[in-house]
Length: 90
Image (cartoon, rainbow, N blue to C red; front, side, top):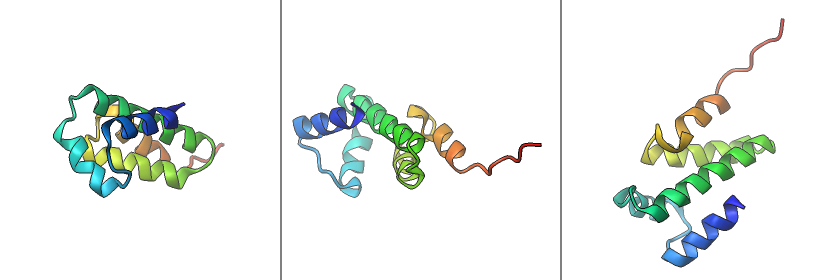
């Protein structure tokens, strides 16, 4: 579902698919409803990927969102969880 939202917004807004091209567009209008929905869906896809075991892709997504706003959209939290050392069970 999150990926469908991402694709629909990219198509409707005619946004590029490459992050380096998309980043300035998102940064320029972080308060726009479409941008916020896109970033929320993007983070949701990162969380889903992490839960499915694709940690590398989830880390890439959270790193992208952190470049825009580390504290918003849960990027900082998810990134720290994905990069925290595993605790030994005693």
